[in-house]
Length: 111
Image (cartoon, rainbow, N blue to C red; front, side):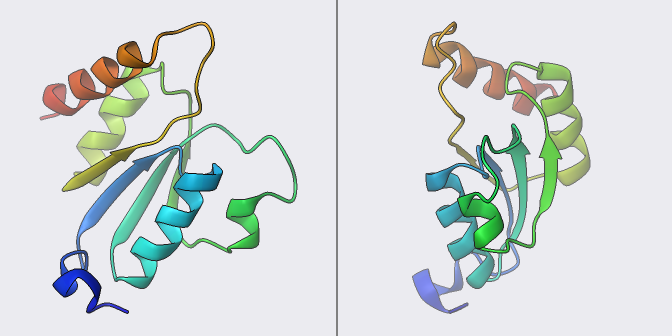
């Protein structure tokens, strides 16, 4: 599996926001199999069992809200991701672009 995509993800640090959701957990599953070191950031899954727990993902998990820019910046500083996939749960009270901009701000503010 580590040779998929020419081994592009093998040994790469990947951050996934929304890793505990359906799409994020599948992405996490496949990236792990391709050798990536994955960290996930997001809310607790709303159900138990949930898709992420059923896949038995072995990732560094940080439980937090995507609207918490300080926590995101701390994660960028400590984990130093090389690739970021942004798949957060939609917050009805906030336009999607605001979440994306907050993520970018956290990325570029990390030392």
